[in-house]
Length: 270
Length: 298
Image (cartoon, rainbow over all chains, first blue to last red):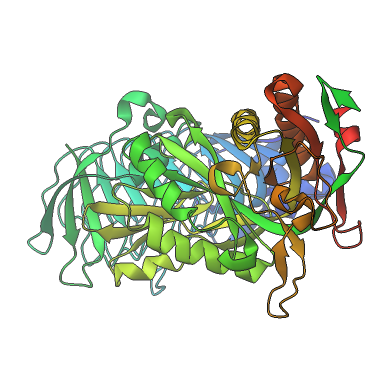
C-alpha cells in the first residue's frame, strides 16, 4: 500500500477546513468516498477531488503535497496514523490531537498543537502565536505528547500548557510559557519579554539567559538528576535536541512566577 | 547421583508463589548506591518475621542505569501484593530517600504498577515536581542535598520464593567455604537473590514446634549435635549443615542458580569435606514449585 497523497490542484482565496482528512476518519473508506468528502471553504463547501489530486490508498499514512498557509485544522483530533505535509499549514494544526504523528515541512500558523493530548508533532519551519496553547476561554492547553519546532515560535507559546514537552530549536516570542500549569518547554534560542508570565508550575529549560520579570527569584546553580533522563528521551528525534553536545545537567534555577503560586521554574544552562 | 564424591540426594526443594518487584538505586558513586541498597534490603531475610525477603541482585554499570550514574538493582519478594507495596514504600522512604545523592527507579516495567515514589513525593510539602518523560512519571522531591529523583511506580510480578539446598560437610569451616563458593557463582545469575546473611542460612527450619506459639522451629533432623537423640538425616561424620535459600522471578531462574551453586560446591568435592547435597521440602503438599536436585544436576 502506498501513502494516501493529496496533491493541491489550486490555491483558493478562502481558508479550508481540513479536519475531515485525518487517518482515523478515512479508515475503511474507498478512494471514491474520500474524493466525495466535502471540506468547508470559506462560506461554501468544496469536494476533496476538486481541491486535490488523490493517489495511494494507505489511510494510515497521509501526505499533503503543495500545502499552503490557508489549510486549517490539519490533523484535528488525529487518533493514530501519520500525516506528512509538504509546504506551509494554516491555523490549528494538530488541534486536540490524540495520538499518531504529524510532520510539517514548512511553517505553521497560529494555535498549532492547540490542546494537543498526545502524539508527536514536528514543524520544520516557524510557527505563529499560541503554539500548544488553550483555545480562548479554555483553561488547559497542550496536555501531553511532544512538539518539536525547528524554527522560531511566536508569542505565548505554551499558554495554559498542562503537560507534555515543547521543544523549540529557534527563538521564542514574548510571553513564552505564560499561564503555564505544568509540562516542559525547552528553547535553544532566545526568549522574549515576560517569560513564564503567571506560570503556576512547569519547567522552562533555556540555553540562553532570559530577561526575567521581577517575580522570578534566583534559587542558585544546581546539578539536576532528571535532566539526563529528559535529554535521553530526545535521542531518537531528528533534532538538535538529540545531539550529545546539547546535553547538560548544570543549571541556574529561578523559581516563579511568585505573583502566582511560584511552583514553576526557569532552568538556564550554565 | 554422585558428583566429584558428593552425593546428590534423591529429593527436592519445595517453593511457593510470591509477589516480587525490582528497584534500581543510583547515586553519585557505587559506594553510596551500595550503602543505600544495603539499607533497603536489610532485615529482609525471611517473610516469617521481616515482612519481605530482599537482596541485592547486581551492581549496575552507569550505562545500565536510567540516569547514567553507578547503581545497584535490588529484588524484593513478599507473600502478597499489599505486603510487598507496604514494604517497598517504607523501605524506599527510610533507606533511599534519606541516603545522600540517591535516586530510585523502577526495575520492572510490566505487571501491576505499585507505588515506588508516588507517595514519597508528599515529603516535598508541595514543592515536589512531577515530570512525565517517555511515558514514565518521575517525581523530583527537594531535599537538603539537592533533589531526590524517583520514578512514581514499579512493576509487580508473580515470582517464586523458597528454592533451597542443604550442604552437608565434615566440618563447619568446610561447609561455610562451600557455601561461599556457591554464592559467588549464584550472584552472577540475574533475577535471583539469596536473602539470608551473606546468602547462607545456618538455622534451617522445619514447620511447627513443640511450643504452640511458634510456627517454625529448628530442623532437628539436620542438626549435627542431635544426631544421637532425634531422627537424624545426617551421616555419623557430618559436623555441619548450611542452607542456601533462593528467591527468583521465575522457576527457571531458580533452577539456573541452584545448578551453578551446587556445581561450585561439587567442584570442591569430597576432598574438601563436602559429603552430600540435600534439600528442604514439606512432602510436596504445600508448595507448588518442586526443584528436584538430580533433575537440576542432570
